[in-house]
Structures are given as C-alpha cells and as structure tokens.
Amino acid sequence: MAPKSVPKTCNTSKRIANWIASSEFNLERPPLARTWNKRFRGSRPSQSAAKDGAPHALIVLTKIKGWATRQEAAETGFLDEIVANGSPVELSNSLDEMQPGSWWEFEVKYLTSKGYTPGCNGKRLIP
Amino acid sequence: MDLEGSDIIKDFETFLHERGLVLQERLFDQETFGNSLLQCGNGVLAVRVVSDRGVCSITVAESEVQPRKWYDAALLRDLLVGQGDDVLPLVEQIEFLRKNWDGVVQCLASERREESRKKLVQLGLERVRRRIPGLL
Image 1 (cartoon, one colour):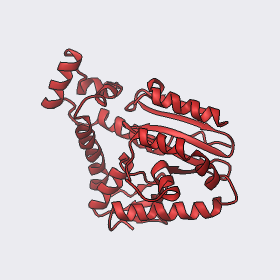
Image 2 (cartoon, helix red, strand yellow):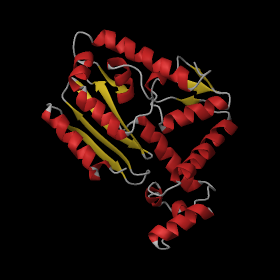
Image 3 (cartoon, rainbow over the protein chains, first blue to last red):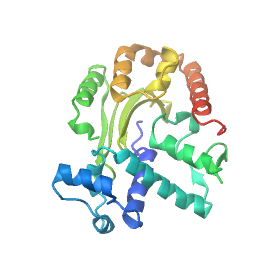
C-alpha cells in the first residue's frame, strides 16, 4: 500500500512558514524590496500581511533572484531558536536518506555546526 | 516550483504511466512555499517528485516492502552507474531515471532487492560522512 503522508521535510517547511509568519523576521530588507518592486510593481508582501496569516505571500518570493539567501536567513533564524532552547530535534527520516542539496541537509549541517550529534539510534539530533 | 505547470514533470509523469505506474497522490501546498508532491506507483515501486521550499527531488521507494524508505536519484545512480555529483539538477535526475529505469526496477523489485537495499543504505551513510564530516 502506498504511503499517503506528505513528506516530513514538507512538514518542516510548514513549521518554518508558520515561524516566519509569527516571528519578528523581516521580509522587507532593501535588496529584496527593490527586486520585488521591479518585478511586481510595488505590490510587496509585508511582515504584517504574513502575521495576519498570509504566508502564501512567500510563494512568489521563491521565484525572486536572491530568495535562497533570504530563505537561508529564515532557516537559520528558525534553527537558532531551537538551539537557544536546547531542544533535541526529531529526524523525520534516517540520515542515510538525506538528500544532498536539500533544506533538510542544510538544517542537519547547521545543527551539527552548533554541536548537535545523532542520538536515539539516529532518530534524533541532540545538543 | 509548481509541479503542475512544469512540462518536464508532465513528460516524466507520462513516462511513468507508460511503464504501468498510476497516479497515487498530487499535492500543492500554496501556503507553504508552494511545496508540491506528485506520486505514482504500481504496488511494487513508487516514484515521488517533491518540490520542498523550491528544491526539487525525485525519489523511489519499494512501496510493497518499505513504503517509507525513499532513495533519491543520485543514490540510485551511485548504485547502478557509479559515484558522480551528489547534487543533481531535476533534469538530470529525470534523465537518469528514464535511461536506467529497467535497472532501477531490477535492483528494487526483484530477488536482488535485499542486496540493493543494504548497498543503498551503505552508500547513503558514506555520502553523509562525506558531506557532513564529523556527524557520524
């Protein structure tokens, strides 16, 4: 029987989208704002729009040059909170399934650089 | 990336249908970075195309035996052809699977699959050690 669940990496990105919407993360830094204005004629998404429950505004951002840098900033902000809390991280899949170049790999690499190590038979990263 | 609107994904889906895999799931999460999922399978194998935060990957699972264990195209390439670039663009992932489909089926859906599974886990762990030194 085929699995019906959404990939867990996507669950992580849902958490990150929610985190962006609920945090002080600033979506309107100058380089991005300029790009946005040029391409979308001033209809910028705003932090307040995201806070009002419109993280879908982020979708279009993924099409903008330089978004990867912004995404990295969002990812590290999200992970820094986890590190600051000293929370262990549950892994959705075993490490041998980690796809090179994925955000999942980015997250594991970042947490490793902050001193996290695998534990619980490779099912967790522990600070 | 919206998988729905991509011609190369449509062509790949047609390729999978022609090999007997039927559509099992199609998702588009507009509110989360436009994440998308397309999954086709035939009861023995499943192929999944995922766009997660803008990064696209194609993975294959033995849906009959280990439905939650997904092997990415680069890992299957390492097994069937030999080691190459760890990060493959979507076009190259598709090209590899198209060209080596019979090999993928043979290694994951035949009596060889136990041996293939062990090798794939080993290759996956070696890759992690190579890419994140000190983690394992």
